[in-house]
Amino acid sequence: MPFLFFLRRNPTVKIEFLSTLKLKVCLGFLLIFILFQSAFSQPISTAPPKIKLAVIIVFDQFRADYLTRFSPQYLPASLPQKKVGGFKYLMEQGANFIDCRFDHYPLYTAPGHAIVVTGGEPYKTLIVGNEWYDENQQKKVYAVSDPKFGLSPRNLGSTTLGDELKLSTEQKSKVVSISLKDRAAILLGGFTADEVFWFDSNHWVTSDFYGKHIPAWAEKVNDGLGKTKEDLVSPRGNELTWNMAMEAVKNEKLGNHDVPDLLTINFASNDYVGHVYGPDSQEVKRMSIASDRGLSAFLNFLNVSVPGGLKSILLVVTADHGIGSLPEYLNSIRIPSERLDPQMTIKTVEDRLTLRFGEGPWVSSFIPPFMYLNPKTISHYSIEEATVEQEAVDALSEEPSILAAYGRTQIMKGALPRNEVSLSIEKSFVPLRSGELVIVPGANVIWSSPKSKEAVHESLYTYDTHVPLLLYGAGIKPGTYTEPVKPIDIAPTVAYLLKTQFPSACEGKILTEAIH
Ligand SMILES: [Zn+2]
Image 1 (cartoon, protein in one colour):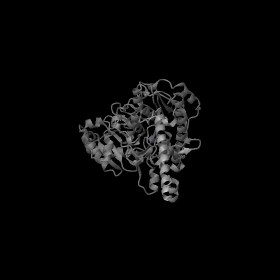
Image 2 (image 1 turned 45 degrees about the vertical axis):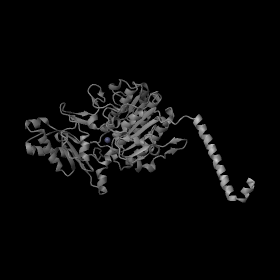
Image 3 (image 1 turned 60 degrees about the horizontal axis):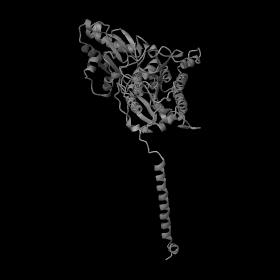
Image 4 (image 1 turned 180 degrees about the vertical axis):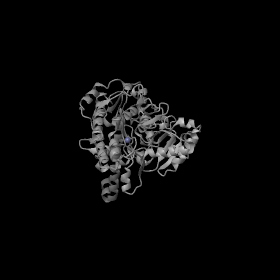
């Protein structure tokens, strides 16, 4: 039977035959395409992409919920003319760790920044607070104070990411750190940073530790600032910082070297505004929206300034701590909250120890939450330190506003009850810096002088500990990650991607789930 006649008589077969024919043709083309591809294209590389510039951005006092709470006002992920947005772009195109919580205590700027770039807890970084009391000198010590240079990271007990990058590239990498706050800029930068800038009333400055003078380009930035004192308690403070960061990228040619460079930036104005107005204010909302705009502009700037654009950048966005709501606001909506006068906490301890052992003074200093007992009084009465501490702990534990209090002896023996609070204290305790008593107020109780109307961060509750963690760029697998992680995980993750040794105090883990 002629073939065409057969087809005409059997239409079903015809369709099947044609389908088979089409399939064969398609498979043929596919095979040719694959052969062509394998002959002329490069094999898929499994090596991590080359990072030209790592940028660590720490918003000072930025709660995790600000990312979602203000999101209707944030820029869309994509903007016209191939530009990108801010937070939303990073949340969509980066790794968004929605459960990132600090687990040290207390939550202040200095310890938070030390943790981010070392991956170590305060018991190892030794940065237990913004300041502490030194019994020998009988005075307060600032976290970045240095008798020789004025300000430096000498109190820090670890290398930073920047230090490790310098060590791993025979100093070829450039490391620049910028913040309005000296403690944030210095702790982020570490010991070996090329340039560390902070703002001294109305100019960018550095200390002798990093070199006597700021570079000529930074002098030029200062010249352009004008004579009037800059308003740092507004988005204007952040604008100054974004601008300085862009000038640093341009003038230090960050991202334009054979080895990766590192830029660390802290945005301090978010903290200034948050303290004055509280997290539930329109001012904080406006500040967060301005932060989003600034972030977007900076990303678009990096995209055209660094060879390879955003694909060759590794970016981290996080915060050093959150903030508690204003007690007055919480009370107005029936949530219990109070201001606790630090003088009353001192009085609780003084009164009890006087009653039990005799006249004081018993307290040398109280830098919440660390209370420093007077060694002279203790030795005067020839009492065991542990006995005095326990008496004070008992008195504090009877206070309804206090959740827990622990004595130095008890902490150092590892004799605390096993719970999250005591674990946080153990991870943060440094014998010569943390005092004889660590005191933990209850939820929504803040230490605050009676006259103060400010919001406070310090506690180990989520409003202070829960911060954003966004990773973006070279080597990062986009997605929303719900597993709990900690800010100590940032440093080992960045160190791994930059192929450097981990900072010396590092004890976090690599966030492998977000790495290609
Ligand atoms: Zn603050």
